[in-house]
Length: 193
Image (cartoon, rainbow, N blue to C red; front, side, top):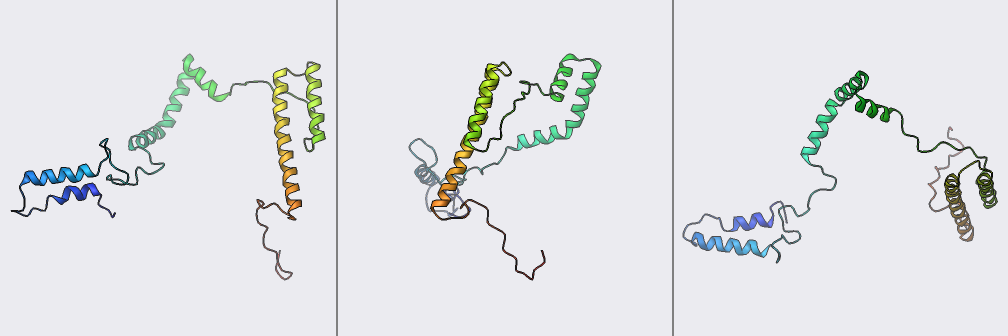
């Protein structure tokens, strides 16, 4: 259906303005019947029949939200300056707010632990043994060991995926993975580098 919706066409169907055809009551009844046919049993528009069959575009935003964001963005510098002035003058709430934004809260302290490179399955076995030894000697906590174990597990899955891809390529006779980016075109001997 072109630009006009069926609703609009149904409204206009009875209003041709020609005298002597039908009484206004009959025209109104015909219009009601036409409009009722465009709705389902619950009174809702049938799919594709409303004044906007495509619906609201994806990603569209309300005008009020856009205006509020624009106003806030325009005043952001002034608001930040005022907050800093209040913090400096001694307002404890604003001071705490500003400090929380400047210095991120530290959830845990960094842990140093010598691990072998995580390139092969045997490296992973050595790494998990090093983590177990560090917990046993009290160098790291069990919670920190759990985080190390998660890191080692991720490395294990990456190694397994790499080995699977290698086997798959070998069995199918490929020299490169099908997901690899295309190679640049080969340059002829006479072209500059």
